[in-house]
Image 1 (cartoon, helix red, strand yellow):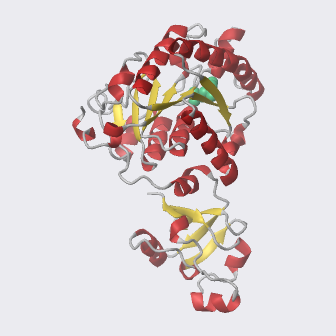
Image 2 (cartoon, protein in one colour; image 1 turned 90 degrees about the vertical axis):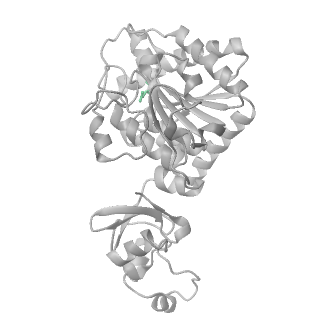
Image 3 (tube, helix red, strand yellow; image 1 turned 60 degrees about the vertical axis):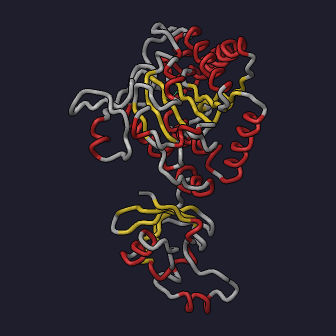
Length: 373
Ligand code: GLU
């Protein structure tokens, strides 16, 4: 086992999200790689026999659609991409179904857009559905609903989608399997970095974009995905998807690739939603005393420590919290932007006189606040 991982939660790994990239699932000419998908089916069967629950995030819809239409180059128009996805997604699911059949495993298709996991109600509904499928012994196979997702409602790519799914289902391990064998130290040794504890600027510098004709995510987005998942308490593994046998080693912490150990105390479900899913509707500008109180002392953010706001939002909106240009936290604001404008910099006793019916006077209560660093 990789030393740095010997203490990680991987030893009791129960829930795994497997993300498979387009070029793992299709041949160069664009046809589906059924053999590899059956090998994944075998690997998943082994994991389940070892007591794990598995969720798959499968790319490939656009790439397989392109293959079916004989397109060599990824289209640039949104409607063409959406058409390719509509064609390829059915090929993808038919093949997944066939690949899992020999093992008696039922699969379920789940197509998501960003909107589906943003609002609290739909977010919880998606969570409950995935939970239900897992409790029924089914393997959910998730992809972005590319056919209906336009730019503003896109996840961006399936690396980010897989991290959000891992956060949503509280997975212990997210494995991003693609053509990339791991994070390669391209500026130094040229070797794969086996373990990354913190995604520092130096680590980011090792990752260059790697867009190909069929897929979109490069190493930079994989690192973004790793940041979301590890902060959610999930260990991340980035490795080659060419050899499905890697899956067996991966859960033992000894596969060739890069591990990103989970942050020890992953944040709770509601705070994960605040931090990663809902889009902020505005910004609260805090003074440096308030920033210190929030970061170092674990305090709530009081109107007294606010110097300004950006945006127009209702009470209960998710907002960013910024100080001297640094967005250091995000949380649910207990006042609307209009109300806040009247109480900026005021002490709680003054606000109480203004809002006698209120019992709490924090702008963002600590229980609804998450630090972003
Ligand atoms: N959702 C896209 C597809 O199925 C893949 C996006 C990605 O690989 O990041 O083709």
